[in-house]
Amino acid sequence: MLKYFNPGMRPWLGLALAVIVLDHLTKWWVSSALDYQEAIPVLPFFSLVLVHNTGAAFSFLADAGGWQRWFFIAVGAIATVIIVRLLKQHAHETRLAFSLALVLGGALGNVLDRVVLGHVVDFLYFHYQGYSWPAFNVADSAISVGAAVLIWDSLFGKKPVSTESDAP
Image 1: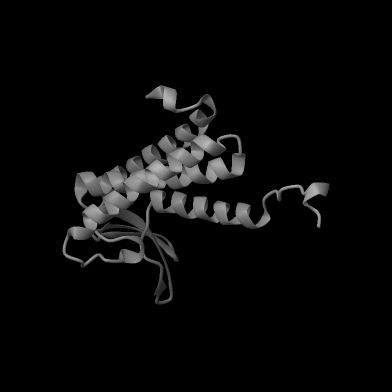
Image 2 (image 1 turned 30 degrees about the vertical axis):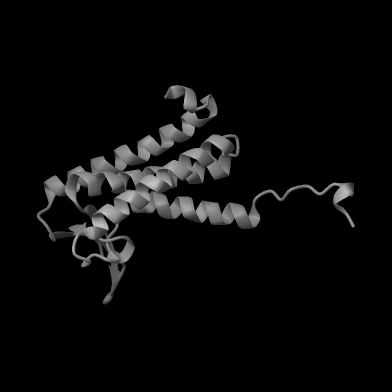
């Protein structure tokens, strides 16, 4: 199996593993420190709160009746295969590989929750004067940062250098 992964992938798979470990350590800590839906104010605009999300981002499909658990596990598994293949092809492209590793670690962190617990543990809750953002976790943060870097790289990354033969 290790033959499949070229040496250039090791740092990126290591980063993905670090995201998974950090994600699950923080989820374990919050789950052991707080009761379900208990909130601890940290700053006027930020609290730690233990919630369980059976849906996707922003609790999308959370009340779908249970089938969504297996759907999101399947989506995560498919995404994992695609991302690992992309990492294998682009391990030498630092920004792209970095962003893919973040997305991979975040996706697997949440998939592991769904497989083991049947829901995702969320606990980072931002709010201000009646406005709030749905609670999220380290895995969600890694996915968001990875996606942002992917978008940034696609818009502002190195453009292919045209040659004279490309000119009309």
